Structure formats: C-alpha cells, structure tokens
Amino acid sequence: MSTAESAADTAPAPAGAVFAAIDIGASSGRVMLGRVSPAGVALETVHRFPNGVVEIDGGLRWNFDALYAEVLAGLKAAATVAAVQGETIASIGIDTWAVDYGLVNKAGKLVAQPHSYRDDRSRAAVAPVHAKLDPARLYQTTGLQFLQFNTIYQLATEQDLAGVQALLIPDLIAFRLTGVRRTEATNASTTGLFDAMAGEWATEFFTALGLRKDLFPPLIQPGEAYGGLLPEVAAVVDLSRETRVVAVGSHDTASAVAAVPATADNGGDSFAYISSGTWSLVGLELKHPVLTEASREANFTNERGVDGTIRYLRNVGGLWLLSECQRTWAGEGFQPDLPALLAAAAALPAGGPQINADDPYFIAPDNMPDRIRAAVRRTGDLLPNDPAAITRCIMDSLATGYAKTITAAERLAGRRVDVVHVVGGGSQNRLLCQLTANATGRPVVAGPVEATAMGNVLVQARAAGAAAGGLAQLRSIIAAGASLGRFEPLDLTLNAARN
Image (cartoon, rainbow, N blue to C red; front, side):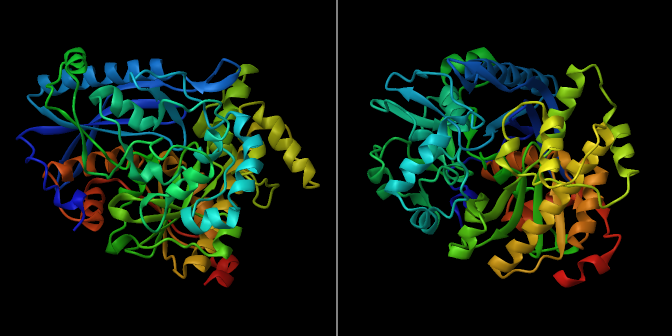
C-alpha cells in the first residue's frame, strides 16, 4: 500500500471538514472548496483570478508575486466561507502547469519572476544539452517527450545557479505558505531530470550538465504533507497554523487523470483520456513506463501519476488555438458568442482543411487566425478568413490529432482502448467531443469539467481519512456524482481498420 493510501502520518479529518484546492492554469486560476461524500465531490468556487505571461526583463515571465497575492486572497475567502457554514478547512492542495520554476536563494527570496515555457529562450539550449546527453539516453532514463521548453533545457539557459534552489511553481507556492522546500513527484517527472523507473532524481544527469544534485529540494509524494501554515500566513488568511498543505498531483494533468470516472461501466482499465484545456494531454494510464526507441520516436512521454501510475501521453495542441483566435477577433471588434460560433462550425461540411495542432509554430501568442490560415496554405489548401471555418478547422484538427495519438499509444503500449474519457474544459465542447468519437471510432465520455480540482480534493480527502482506497475507489466517488455526457461514433466504418 502506498504512503498516500495508508495516510499513516495523518489524523482523521474533523467533522465538517472541507478541503481547499488551489488550481492554477496558464490563463486563469481559482481557489475552490471541496466536500467529499459517497455521493461525489461537491466544489464551490470562492475566488477566481486571471493569469498570463507578461513581458518582464526582456522575456515572457509569470508575475509570481501577483499570483501569490491572489492565492492568499483566495484562501482568505475560503476561510470566510467555511466559517460561515460551520466547517473547518482540513488541508490545502496546489496544482498548476508543469516544467516552469522559480529560483529561490538561501534567504528564501525569489531572485527573479519565473520564466514561462512560452518564452523562446530554451530553443538555443537544446543542442548543447544533447551534446552532453544523447537524446536516446535521456529517453531511456526519463521517458520524457521532447519539448524544447522542458525544465532541463530551461535550466541550461541560466547564467548563475550558485546558492539557489529551483522550485517548480506549485512547490514554490507551498514554500511561501509553509516555509518547507520539497518537489512533488508528478511534477518532478516533467523536468527531464527524473528517472522514470526508479521514481527518483536522475543524479547522473545533474552531474553531466554541471548542476548541483541539490538544485531541487527532496521529493514528496501525493498525499504527504509539506507542513502547516507559517504564522504570518495563517494570520493573513484567517486559518489555523495547523492547517496543513498536502501534496496532491501538483501537475494539473496528474490531478485531472486521477479524477477520470473510469468505472466498469465507463471503460474500466481499457480507457484513454484526454485532458482538454489550453493544452490537450492525450494518453493511457499504465503501471510501468514504455521506454522503447519506438516510443521515443513517436514522442510519447512517461509522466508520474497519483499512486505511482504512469501517464503515458503526448501533448497535442489544445483550445489555446481557439482562445487565441477569440482574443485576436476581439481586438478587431468581433466578439462572437462561443456556442453560436461552435454551432456555425458544426454546420459546415466534414472534410475541410486541417493543421498539425501541436506544431510549435502555434505555441507563442500572436495573430492565431492568420497563423492557422498560413499553415493551411502550406499544405496546399485554402481556409477562408471566416471565424466559423477557422473554428471548424481547429476542432477537426484536434480530433484528428487525438485519434492518431490514441492509436499510436495502443500500439506502443500493447493496450486496447474501448472508451475515451474527455475531462476538463473541452468536455463541454460538444462539437469537439463528437468529432473525437467519430475520429477514434470509440465512445467518448465527457466530464467532469472540474476534473483537476476534483482530483486535487480527493487526494487531500484520502490523506485526511475522509476517503479511502486506491484510484478505482476514488474514481467511483467521481462517477457517483458527476454529470457525464456520452458521444457515440457516427460512422464506425471509417474506423474499422483501427479495431
């Protein structure tokens, strides 16, 4: 039994206990209160705030100080709501995006605002890193998909790492709250410096790159506690100093996958998942990593999940494409209603032009409609400058990308997929879910929308003794209370060759 499952070092949750989930994405964040019962997980949003990259000191960075101020405001709001309802916040869990980090000196001060993965600085570091560590060797150890913004390449651009530690974003927030420095394992597995088989830091890579072996703090597993709140933090947010910050799947996808409602009626163990949001994370849940050369050539990643599982997946382009189009259109004075836009896109005939949705060409913010039309022209096709047509191109391209990725994952992992689960914001997009069912030839189960926060809360609840069991038991709680949609493939004959 894992440490997280046994929760031997934790006291039972008090009566009326609730759990605070800090859930921050690349474009927004929120603090939510979660209540767990056999009937499901009930979430209440108490604070929302924007997030986004900003130009600071000549690069794209996160304004972490502003982000942390919003976290404190959210925790104070959570304390107020809980007190009014006669509840006690038992613990706090934090999840964010992966790979980015802040550098903290010996005094605990952030030396600069953290760079964003969308900054182009790490591109030039790829070749020097690969000159020291052959990509095949990197993959055989880390199992990590090559992305130019992986932490290992970002660190290679740093000019001076003397006297500092690197804290991944959720760990940096936890440090500010508790004063304790740790690195949560699911997020550590995205750095390119983590041994996928051993579940530990790949210390030989630190040596090869001239990095200190203590550059990152020691590992902590989901369900283990960083510690209680610092006195000054507790005073600001009106919570007890005994309120613990508990590690969850701090990589938001790890929390989202933990909340996939895969029960016997919804795919059991033979499911694929799509965590659909700014990015789309598409893959399978495995017990062991796939470290073959074929897997590396297909650019699949083996990231850690809750309870030591492996999230075998690829990053595929996501709804960032559409949100960036909406931003551009709004700047031009056109603000279409999203449901109406999707309905207009759905009315267009199938078989239109498509793009490679996970091309790095689309990573940075810019005029996305023009970029998409230019990418279509490079394929020898044409796409009209029409929001509905561009939206349909995005949806078709994402669905095609999902289908190709799932088919490849089945082949490489030797697993069959019977059901595709879509969680996150994209589960509300009926057009995307139906196109995904059509493209994969598999039923799509859509929901929950708030899978990340639910996974966050469930790991906290289990650590506090308010939930029990492994992932199957936690997922049964999700399935009991979630409102799920189901989309059947409209034309299975197009996908007969997959089966």
